[in-house]
Image (cartoon, rainbow, N blue to C red; front, side, top):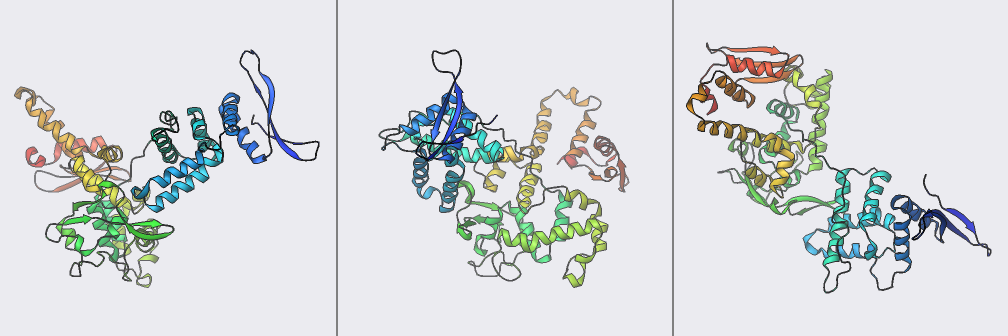
Amino acid sequence: MATTPRIRIRTDGSTYSQVRYRITRAGHSKPVQTSQSFDDHAAAIRWAKLLDRVGPIEAERVLAAQLAADPDVVMLKVWLHRYVDSLGKSVDDETKRKYRRMIDRDMVPFFGEHLPVDAMTPELDAAWIDWLETEFDNGPKTIRNKHGLLAAAMGAAARKRPTPLIPWNPCAETRLPKCSAREVDHLDEHEYELVEQLLAPSWRDWWEFAVMSMARPGEQGALKVGDLNRETGGVSIVRAWKWANGRLKLGDPKTLRGIRTTFVPLETVARLDLDRDADEWLFLTPTGVPVTSVRFWQQGWAPMLERLDALIKGDRTPFTGAAGWGGLSFDELRKRYGHIAARLRTKRLVPYMSRHTGISWRLQDGEPIWVVSRDAGHSSITITDRRYGHNSTAASAASAQVIAGRLPRLRSKVVGIEQARRRRLVQLGRLGEIERVGKGFEAVWMDADGVVQSQVFSTYDAAVEHVAEHEAGDLLAAAA
């Protein structure tokens, strides 16, 4: 049961808040009844909640530290703000503003205004984590972000010279809620093509470039004509649009490795208007202003989603001349992509999916993960592996095939090995084609006469087995 402060009246008519609780004192075997009094009712409520979370012994220790604090002792709130100020130019002003808001909104209400920095303990840190999770329903990632700031500040307090404020970092070993990163959604080639066809023609160059470059939307919108080498397809990413105090400004890319040169296909370069001054923005909206992530969402992505929903429902309205539609007709879209539209809508469709798709495609095609990580501007290869490593199967499968050459020749002739290799090529997309359809999995293959055949199977494995057995062509040629 939660402890509730009671309001009491003194003999002089003034009021105070009393928190009653039981505690087992040293040398006693049974708990005794006691209480604490507060002139500030809000402080009483905070301490009562702390009492429920950390127990009476720890709560009394915190209260004693607050009451006995020397005027020269640094308070936790003061130190946290001082730490943010000390970050200097290594952190931009907008990020500092977010940190200060996090301190005032998420830390001070729990720890109080007058908790000395040296009164912080692992138990108190753990109670704060529980408070964020239960009182505010903060998710694991949000808690980790907030705790990261507190832990960094306490680490700085322990490293302060010439005299550390605390002997060690009490937040260093706190167990945090498990943060299981969900697999990011990406598009296959058919889904990508459907999105492109549903975008207004003026936005299709942006969409293709986004996927091919793997650039973040803020980085892509900040590109200028001179940042793209039309001969090589090299893209110099050196700046990005960022939000600061509710306004957009140009700044550095998100990470230290964000300043980079990546490459896009020359076919993508050929779609762009590069016969302009090098200092002009590479991408402009139909009204001639620089493209930002917000503008792409409002003018390109949101209308695309409306058309997707209309295509699924059979609504022709967005695909008429009166609606200003300049793409394929409704009937043609339904004919080509009707079986894909509903499947596409089950994914988390956001503009950032262009980056997820570009990264996933490169890994699926066997490009080394360290190359993809560098070209994507991730802060470390660990980030790439954690979020996209499940897509990096092509290189592993190819590696297994290479090392198989070390096995004795006789082993390679065992019945079934040849078919197993062909199944692997089917799964990698190098033999035939398998696509999920409403009633199962459609297998498409070319027979020995050069005729394309198709058949629907109830399971994916059955479709793979059939294509592996009936696809014409030499195995080594398919693997090349």
